Amino acid sequence: MQFKSRNLRALAECVIGDLPGFPYRSSKYITEFFEDCDLSFVHDGSTRWAWTADRLAELLAEASPQQHSLPSRFTHLLRVLMDRSDAAEGDADRNVALATLNAPLRREGYEAFFDDTSTLQFRHIATKRISELSNPHRPFHPEEVKKRADLAAFLDRCSEDELIEEILLPMFRQLGYHRITSAGHADKALEYGKDIWMRYTLPTMHVIYFGLQAKKGKIDSSGVTKAGNANVAEMHNQVTMMLGHEIFDPEVNRRVLVDHAFIVAGGEITKQARNWLGNKLDASRRSQIMFMDREDILNLFVVSNIPLPSGAAAIQPLGGADEVPF
Image (cartoon, rainbow, N blue to C red; front, side, top):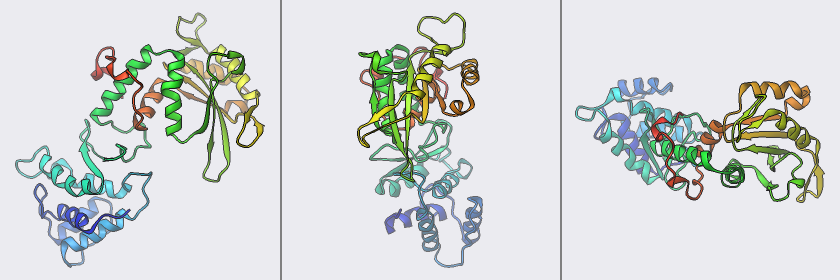
C-alpha cells in the first residue's frame, strides 16, 4: 500500500507535532515515540518530517491483514499517536487532532474514529469496511451496535426460512463460500438433513464441502422442549444424514461427501446440547461438527458489512439497543 507524498508528509507532521492537536516532538522524542510503538526506528538527525514520512512509508508497505484495510503496525502507530494522555490543551477529547489526522487519511479513502470504548478504529470509506474486520469480537462502532440490535430484533421475529434466506446465505457469500445451494422447505424430501450445502476453496486450491442445518430458536437437551426450540436429539439424526449423504456438484460433475457440518441456531446452543451430540458421534465425525449460535451470527453479520434484511431496521429491539451485549 502506498500513500501520496503530500499525505505522508501530513501524517508525519502529526507525529512530530507540526500540526494542530499534536505535541511537538524533537529528534529525541521522535525516537521515544517510535519506541512506544514497539518500533526500533532511531531518528538520525535529518529533517524530521522527511525522515518520519519515510518510516511511515515502510510501515504502509507491509502486508495488510485483508483487502481495504491498513497494515497492523501502521494502525498501532496511529492509535499510540491519538492516545488521550497526549491531548493538547483545550482538546481533551482529541476532536481537533482527529480532524487533523483525517484530512490526509480521507484523501487516501480512509477515516479514523473513536468507538464507544475510546479505541481508534479505521474505516475504508468506499466499502465501509473496518480495519481488523476479520475479528468478530473487536469493539463495535456505535453505528454497528445499532445494526446489531436491529438484527437481534429481526432474529426474534423471523421464520426459519427468513433466517436462511435473509441472514445466512448473504453472510456465507460475504465470508468467501461459494456454490451456496439452499434446499428450501418446499420439498423436504430433498434435504437429507441439511438446509444448505456450499463449498470453500483453500489457498492451495483444494475444495472443502459444507452442509448446514439451521434452526430458528434455541437448541437444547431438555427432555421436554418448548415450542420454537429444537432438541439436540433431532439434530443428531439430521447431522448423521448430512454427513452420510452425497451431494452432486455440477461444476465438477461428480458426487461428493460433506466434509464438515454447521449446526446454526438463531438462539442459544446450550453447552449440554453440544456435549450430548459430541458423545453420540464417533471421534471422526465429532471433528466434523461446527456450531454457530445467535452471538456468532450477530457478530459475523455486522463485521462482514452486509446490509440488514429488508424491514429489519424498522423493527425496534426488545429492551432497546443499549441492552444488547457485545
